[in-house]
Length: 296
Image 1 (spheres, rainbow, N blue to C red):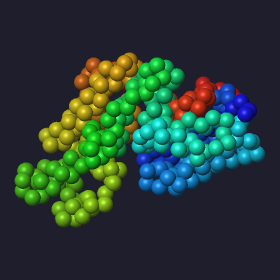
Image 2 (image 1 turned 90 degrees about the horizontal axis):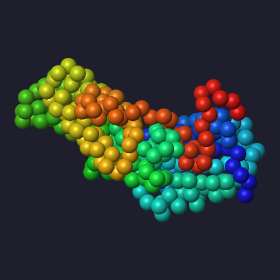
Image 3 (image 1 turned 90 degrees about the vertical axis):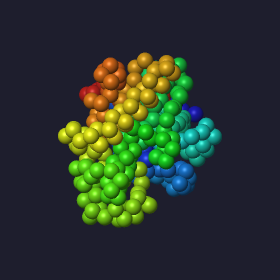
Image 4 (image 1 turned 60 degrees about the vertical axis):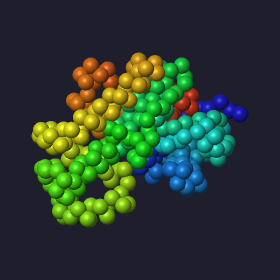
């Protein structure tokens, strides 16, 4: 099999997929975005998204005629939970010079720290912590909206909506935040309840900015929700540190809004990522990254 000359990284998130191709020098050739690829909802449909997105970046790089055995593929998938599932995905992607499939938290961690050991705290719609030491990755948290995701945007939004319904029912005082959230549903608690029957984590997370705004204004209920979320992120970080990660990055849509509520010493230790999860997938596949402005 020919040595890989091109490297494709794919970050299969819960709401979208991103793919990028780099030459062996690390020079970026193409990138694209596609829909989510959840193999646990529909394996074949998820694989179809992955294949289509990979073919798209190959086409954008004008390398359609290249043989696949000159290209290595790194894939990070949200929710990937076992080595057997990773092997199944890899087996469904034959003909490449190399295929590596892992949980997307692993590719995010590799991207955040480069090839070095390190950790990552993901604080987005969901939450998770990961330590990668000596090439071995350990994920903590990331149990999903029903059983975990403490400190996440989804949990922050859900906690605020629950408080709004309690206020609606007269079980606690009506706050400015609760009044604002109820207004999103026409002031109708029943309408909010019906909405919740089909709402997804991202739908709850969409309300997080309103919670942060209320917390910034000093509203006690909002402050309590945000501070509880910060405590959950701090617990993840402490666990990742005990697993041996010394350099830890913090990423995600609620990462920076939560930073002021973290203990000051911890906030100072949580660094910005070096690269994104897509480049982490490229590194996983054996590729390199060119410095900004670098050539092919």
